[in-house]
Length: 123
Image (cartoon, rainbow, N blue to C red):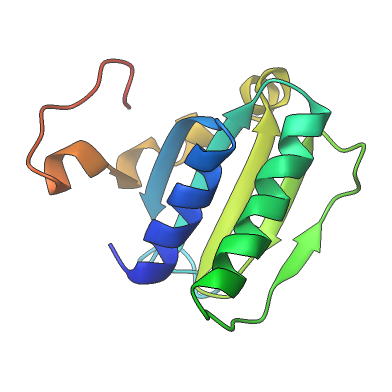
C-alpha cells in the first residue's frame, strides 16, 4: 500500500475506528485508486476520526487536496483525498448502505500483505 493509505489507516486506528477495510478501485473507478471504509460507535467518534485524518496528513506533510462531505451530525462522512476516498460510518449506517457487499471482489487483505494470517471477519 502507498504512504497516503498507511497514514489514513493509522489515523483511523488512533481514534479506535473499527472494521477497517481497504478496496482496490483502480479497475472500477476513474476517480480513485483506493477506497477505505471504517466504522465508529457514534457521531463524536466519527468526527474524531475525520479530524485525526486531517491532523496525520499535516504531520506527515502530505499536502493533498482534501474534501469532506457530510456534517458533524452525519452518520456517514466521506473524505476525498483524490486517489484515496475514505468512508467513515457509524456502524448501523454502514450496515444499511452495504458498501462492503458491493465491493467485496476488490477487497485488499492487509494482513496478507504484511505476511500475517488474516483476521477473522475479514471479507
